[in-house]
Length: 414
Image (cartoon, rainbow, N blue to C red; front, side, top):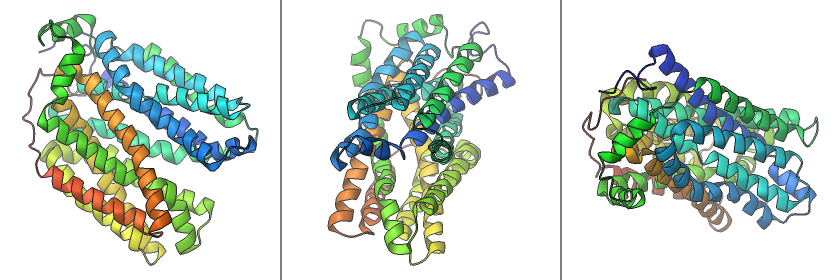
């Protein structure tokens, strides 16, 4: 049992709630900033005469930076603590949005997106913090808060950007910077470290201290169970991200919807996903376990994609979006929880960082696959292809086993 002298266990339930709230805000603010900037990025780049290929590269640069830096942030947090890395990431994101606000060329826009991706790559640090302070059997429930922050960020970000864009070209970027800077201040004053230096050293000593951390991480990633979970993360994220680049064109061509109405549909998708991840998963996951939740939600995932692609009417489209949001909202936090539970305690940050990189790679591959399917097969095919990917993910989930709880040290319930 953890000593009462440590920062993580000395807090009562209200302190635990405050920590989770700040972590929720950290991810929410990052995704709000991402949502503010993403719809405006093509228009800003177009002012400088950027081609479609260049604009696509600008969009992908964010995920590419996360792909490379997420494991680095995770390992640094294992060594130096979660709190300082979270704060550094928030400050870096704030600076990136200031650069975006005053960008005067495509090159500076690219710099701002790479910087934002580097700052946003610390999301696995927030996940590792939750793993530090949450019992294994409740990890999926609290990881759902991170997913809910994703969903809500995608709702509020574009709305804020749309309101501020007419004010000035700099206003959206400055608003995103202010949100990140404010949350960095909040974390600095109110977020304690999840593990003390003594606890981190003790964990390292109990995990073969003579072995280099990177070698231990490679050994952990060599586990068949962890490889299967990372494959699930990749497949589900590819399937989900396939709809982002083509859905506005699909909705316009099949149903005659315009930009504002498509924005409402994305907001609806994000809202249902946030309710699923932040509410229902927190109630269901501790009772049935992550593996059962992934298997059942994969059915909703596949059904949603198929219904979207074949939808003959707006009500059918809304039903498909609802099923997709429920499916993804149930699989994402469960997959992240399993990554944590199949990983040694002293490698949480590094392993979750690899998981974030796998997700970033999937968010690069998914839109590319969807674009090819849209161009060469037809408007419905991005969703039908994504459904086949999700079916494969569901089959992979049949190979998983539910971890026993608790498999490591007991931590206070958050």
